[in-house]
Length: 301
Ligand code: PSU
Ligand code: MN
Picture 1 (tube, helix red, strand yellow):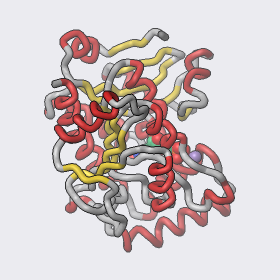
Picture 2 (cartoon, helix red, strand yellow; picture 1 turned 135 degrees about the horizontal axis):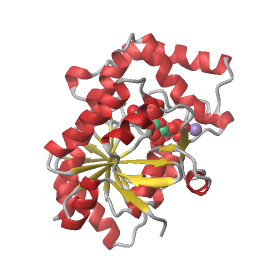
Picture 3 (cartoon, protein in one colour; picture 1 turned 180 degrees about the vertical axis):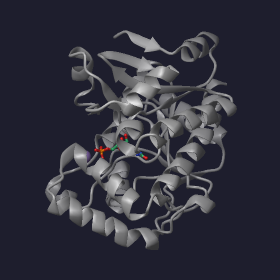
C-alpha cells in the first residue's frame, strides 16, 4: 500500500468507524472559477458534516496522496496554477514524480477505495462526448465505475455529453444506474430528460443495500446514483441546448481536445449563461453531498 495522508477529522472518523464521504478535487481546480471553487468546496464539506458524516476531499499534493484536506491545503489547491487533472492513467505517475494533481471521478474512486470509503459525491460524471464516433473521447470515469466498488452520487452525466450513448456504455459495462426519487434520468443542470430511469430507488438505505449485495455476490464495480438537481435551481434543457451547441462548435473550431474538452465547455457555458450554470452547479453538488452523507450512514450500519 502507498502511504496516505489523512486530515485530522478523517483520521478520527476512521478510528471510530464513523461514516465518511469522499469528494473529488477536479471540480475545484478545473470545474469552477476562483474564489467560488474554494467557497463551494467548504460549503459542500459542511453539508456533509451537517448530514452526520465526515468529508474527505481527495488530491495529490507534492507527490503525497491526501484523503481529507486541511483548510489551508484546500485554499492553496483552489488557487494553484498548472495542477494536473488526474485519472486512472496518470494518478500513479503524479505520485511517483512528486507532482500536484486534482482527482477526477475515476481517480477519486480509486483513492476512496484505497481508504475504504464506499461513497463519493460529485457534480456530474464524465461520459461519452458528442462526436465520440470519430474522436473516441469517452471518459475513463465510465470504466472506473465498472471496476471499483464505490457508489458515486452525481446529478447525471454533464449535458455537454452524448447522454444516450453514455448510458448505453454504462449498461454495456454492467454499471447500475440508479435514479433517486423519479422515473426519468436527470441531466446535470436540468432535473429531467425523456430517458427512462434504468433503476429507481427512493431511499439511501436501499442504495447502500444494493452496493453491499453486489459485493456479496462477487460483482466488481460500483454504482452510479443520479440525483436530480432541485427544481428551483435547474436550468431548463431548452434554455441550455443552444448554448451547449455554441460551446461545442467553438471547441471544435479551436481544436480543443482530450482532457481540455470538459473544462473548456464548462467555462464557456458559465460565460454564456452569465454565471447561472455555476449557481446551478453549486446547488446540485450540495444536494448530492447531502444524499451521499445519508448513504455513508447506511453503509456504516
Ligand atoms: N463535475 C463537475 N465539474 C467537473 C467535473 C465533474 O461538476 O469539473 C470533472 C470530474 O472530475 C469528472 C471530469 O471526472 O470532470 C470528467 O473529465 P473528462 O470528461 O475529461 O473525463
Ligand atoms: Mn475525455
